[in-house]
Image 1 (cartoon, rainbow, N blue to C red):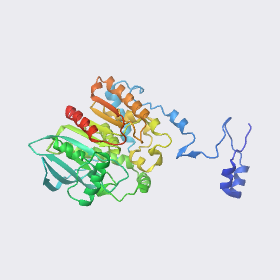
Image 2 (cartoon, rainbow, N blue to C red):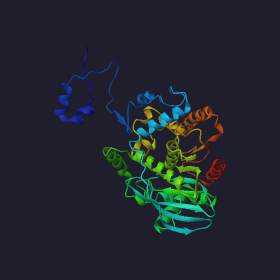
Image 3 (cartoon, helix red, strand yellow):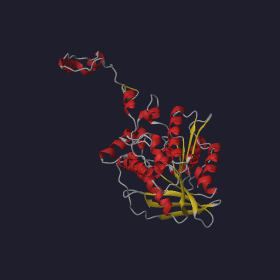
Length: 391
């Protein structure tokens, strides 16, 4: 068998004289026709990333899986998903304590403490409409945005901190037409709850370039940053279902950007969530893993990373675990984070699942012409009308 060494000159110069001599004398078997590039990593991707994508066939996806009973498939897919969270389910008593309550126009503003996990007791904000109740509930899931001083405040206007109020108003102006989505919903008769994810608001202290380190440290401690966020969202949904002001049969999850990811994720993981609205977060894995995508920078990606998951299920396949419950997905035609091809392919995959359940009308997907990565008033009004129909 012919054996040869193939080492690029740039690589030798980096190794230095001693290292180059060692490499040059080593016999390296090279597959026929394969020539190593001087640079094997570009744009944070290996040069063979397209080959890796082709190897992903998502064998557990509904329609591809050998499991033909939908309930069995759904149970199996959720179980595999939960295994790859690397975070155990948590049944710690919530021990809810109301620490502040103030009247507003048509609803009550409330701050409460509760045990989101066995390790963390957190503050949450809630708006409860005036009247006898119980009310339909909405779990509000904040975005990432590389803005860590505010979390829950991005969706419910803070009445307790002037500094955060200024930041929150700036955020609402930028993404939500100057509106606080939670306050809009409370005025429409929904009880809403918002909780900070680890790293935001009351749980801040995180900087952009520290996210990757936080994630790797949690991996080293036997857990997962993305899995922790998923489990905490499941806990928040369970808390909302237990509160006496909330009709546990009518609970939705709503989020924008990373919050949109969290909305369909918690719907896939929790039976407490009867409907979900995801704004500006849906694509296929293969259209996400393309040069220039924000995911390739790492950092924020770790909050939405479950190692090994995509060997089994594509992104829309995971969301489809929630089928046939009502789900809404909005995207912007000019969203720089997601290609229209990725959104369209994902919507098509999900549509096939809901259609197989004779629930085509319970899935709403839309790519908004001319809009980018936003949830502006026009989009909100359409989403709220959809919510009133299903919740």
